[in-house]
Length: 177
Image (cartoon, rainbow, N blue to C red; front, side, top):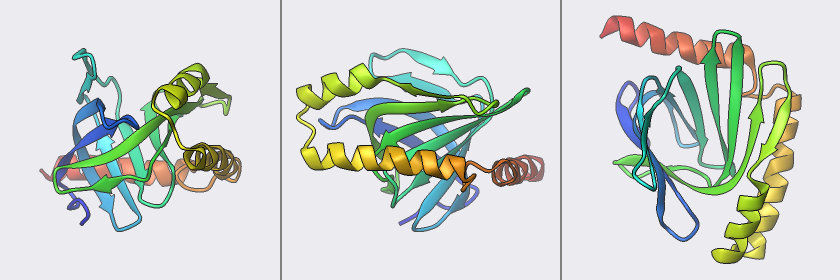
């Protein structure tokens, strides 16, 4: 099952222990097949696990994969494209929402290609608290390397034209509604 193109779906992030971590009120489906879902969020409500709510500031294109242990949010800003990369389980769509397990570690990539690794302490704490299996730890470490290689090689979604194509599709859908 894949989300229907031009529909809106919820996005739900869980932790390894099954607790709901974060939800996005809607993601507009630009592209969808058995390997990936491309969703746009724009001025979307986000609800945190503690109940705090906030509104996204800029358009963002989410790339969720059923065969990669990360997802990528490309944020469209005036000074360029920024990437927020979540180390996470492969995504799935269950008819209600695109869902994945967030494994804490994140890369933030700035428009000037500066890369920062975030939340290492959180990963260590949750790894012990939630008993991440050694297999998961190894998968996460391998996928961190693959993600950086994909970025270095400008493999999708780390390709400006690829992101711009999806953003243009989204804008065209807005004008056709």
